[in-house]
Length: 180
Image (cartoon, rainbow, N blue to C red; front, top):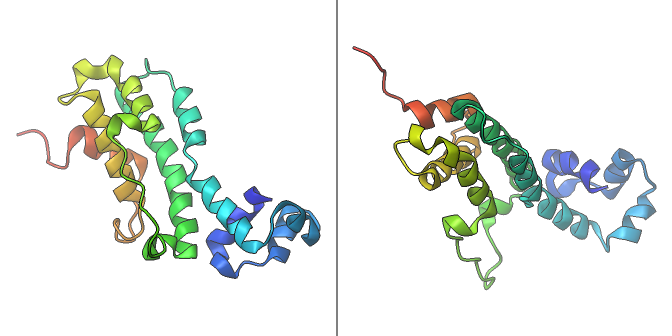
């Protein structure tokens, strides 16, 4: 039901109906209320699902670090951009990232780079390529994540989302012309 609800929430935001979700999931509308207390609980589960990093971590774990550096970074960027585009569409439709947490809600302190399991895995993927990099793998992983986040966020990218090839090219080659 949640998988069926994700694209509907991205399209309709909080105006999505439980009838639409039930139809998309191929279940009776009452089935939704056997699993969830109300529509808000469905929306909360959609947000939790799209922001869960576990699927990305599993896909990063499956990458072979012996692949060529550009190919490896492109695969990692593909994984991250795929999920973030979905995150931005769902949160944008729900206007979650505009309003922030409710007043009085404590904000989670930002994690340190090596506390983030996705960054840890990216660092491990990059370590065999350390001799090809001007910066340590931890910094390259952090920069890749920053480019992916900024390059896929609708507001930060100014409506022109970056493709993964462009993200990797900027990371590895910069934006300056090379040659004479």
